[in-house]
Length: 216
Image (cartoon, rainbow, N blue to C red; front, side, top):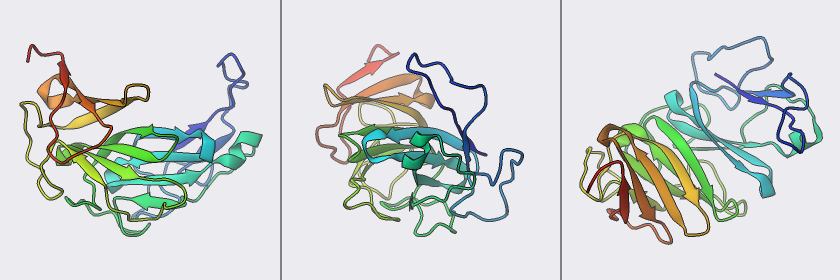
């Protein structure tokens, strides 16, 4: 129900065993979720993506069916900021809604995140909708409730039928982006495989270019 922030040394080890900040809770001693979604609450965080050039953190808030976007630039200076408010939300029209939906603007239990193109494109594993959504999240056009610009695993934004073959997904959960080749790796969990998509452009119903974990 929270995200902890640790200061790392150049070698990658923590500079201190203590976190310097907490996101999703008002202090380090609580783990409340509250009855409603807000811009400071997180329920079941499942995926993170850091946009270092623009000082943003994307958090998939799975049980509230949304992705929260936090401005964490101030944390680079070691400033503790418990109760940090999200700047934007994806998957919901406002910060105080938490309904699951199958649409270009909705999500249903999002999990893994992958950020591409210097912070301009975010891929979201929308697990219970059996799809991966692409959002254009450049800081100049970022806003709450924006519609996805592409979908993998479905032929449109309103279907969520589980599938297999080369264009279907069933409960995708984790993502990894290869920025050099513009490939997206998707853990297609309930199909027991990893799908590889060429995401130079994302077309609805696009077929994967390769599969790992299965012979075909």
